[in-house]
Structures are given as structure tokens and as C-alpha cells.
Image (cartoon, each protein chain N blue to C red):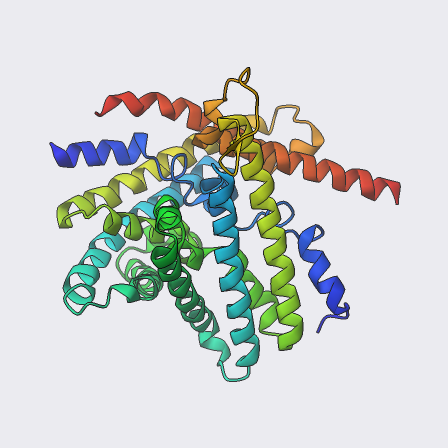
Length: 203
Length: 191
């Protein structure tokens, strides 16, 4: 049982335990879909949906799940919500679903989601698990937005598809290609670590 | 000819790690030493080839004929999880030395998104049976190649003077970025 207040459960996901920058979880989708802000946002929201509902279900039936088969049970629960998200995107937003390709079904193996079930929802009440899931998702969406904004602005000169850079700007195509993803995330991780060190040394 | 093209592009051009960003966790986590990187690569290649074959059979013989397409995600993940367990038991029985070498890396593979990604990509591209298996084997080799190169660079990196905040994952990602740049040079190989 955690002793934090509900608000603190939410806030910790944004920075202290940010899944991408601090825990290095869920790096595959983070790198893969952040070539454009719209894709990053869609991925973030789909993951949010899956994480919130899986956490609610797991925390509500945690007493019914025998501990030997808990991982398998979590995976089936997660896979169910991923299927819902995948079908929903394919039905209502076909272009986004197409450009995200296999990465929506791959939410099922996103370690953030399984990690939260194992570390939090299986031990805490529904309300707290909801706050925890909301905080973690917000942290994940934040990370995706920062990364995809940098990559889209520098790589295509646009933001959400709108031209933001002047005509003088020559897009750095490399930023929307795979190497750009690795290098940008590497620099962001170093920055996050540096900020953390600064704030620690000030205390 | 088609099969050769799939094989080569799976290793070099559409490399799982450097192009699809699949399997980043083991790529960064198990690339500190060349020996362990090699074992991990071997285990992944092995499981990938088998997964490719089994997932194709499940999809084409069970899911599609019964119009259960929407159960793809659930059934694939369960198949992969049980397959890894089975492979583990099988190797322990048949070849203890190989089991020693692969050791802890086998169970880790269940959560490796590269395996699930492989099964999904093969479905997405509408591959036949032989193509799927070749694709799986090639992708596994591609993963092995990438993780071994990474481990080689990292062993050297240990001796280098890396700025404090860049240490660990950050420098690893930047190195991966430069590797991805180099691998982009292969794009022209197959039209």
C-alpha cells in the first residue's frame, strides 16, 4: 500500500517516475510513431485507454486471480482492450490506423502497461490504480508529444500538419527517419538526467 | 529470387532494431558484452523462426477460416508465451549446453516486442508460409547482427570518457542512431 495522496499518485507519473524519461519503458512505440505529432498523439491516447481500463479491471478482480497465472491473466486483459483500441482506430480513423501499422496491436507488449499491473494495480484499490494509470499515461503522452514535436518541426517544418517554419527552412529529413528518432531520444534522456542532477544537488 | 530479397532486406534494410524499433529493450539491456549479446541474438533468432511458422499456421488454418480475425492479438500473444516455455523445456531436455548458453535470455523473449511484431508484420504483408519463415529467420539474424555490433561498440565505449549525463541509455541510443544511419546505406541494394 502506498502512503501518497491521490494527487501525488498522479503527479509522480509526469516526472519523478515518467515511464519514458525516467524508467526507460515503452521505448519501441516511443521511437517508432513519433515522426509526426498526430501519430504520437494517437499512440499516446490509445495507450492511455488500454492502461486505464486494464488497471481498473486488474485492481477490481485482483483477489480472483491466482498468483501463479497472474501474468498470463494480465496479458489476456490487456490484449482484450488493445483489440478494442485497434478495431476502434481502424473503423473511425483509417488513415491513422494505417500509418501506425503494427504498432497499435503492439501496445499489448508495451512494458509500461504490464509493469503498472504487476507493480501497482495488483496491490492497490481501484481509485488509486486509476490515478496511477492516469499519471503514467499523462507522462507517456507528454514524452511522445515532446519527441514528435521536435521531430516533426525539424524534419518536415510542420506541426500537426501546419507549416510553422518559414520558407527559408530546409527540412532535416533525417529527423523523421529512424536515425533521427534514436538521436533525439538519446539527447532528451541526457537532458532529463542533467535536470534531475541539477535539482538534486540544489536540495 | 523473391525469397532471397525478403531474406536480405530483413537482415540489412528493414532491420528490426534499426528500422522498425522492435526489440529495443534487449538491444539496450543485453548489449554490454559480446558473449551475452550473441546468446541473446541466437535465442531470438531461434524463437523468431519458430514463431513465424506457428503464427502463420494459426492465422491461416484457424483464425481466417473461422473468421476470428479479431482474436489475432490475443491468440498471437498466448501462442508466443507458451511457445517460449515449450522451447525452453525442449532445449533443456535435448541440449543442456545450448540451454546453459541461452539460459536466462529465453524467458525474457516473451516480452520482446520483436517477436510479436514479426508475427503481425508477416500478416500485414500477406506472406505465404515459406516467405514468413524466411522473414522470421532473416529478422532474427538482423537482430543478432545489430546487437553484436552494438555490444562491440559498447565494450570500447567503456574505456572512453563519456560526459556524465550521457552515460548508459542516452549514449546507447545515440550510437544506435549512428548505426541506423550506416544501415540506411543498404537501402539501394534491393529495388
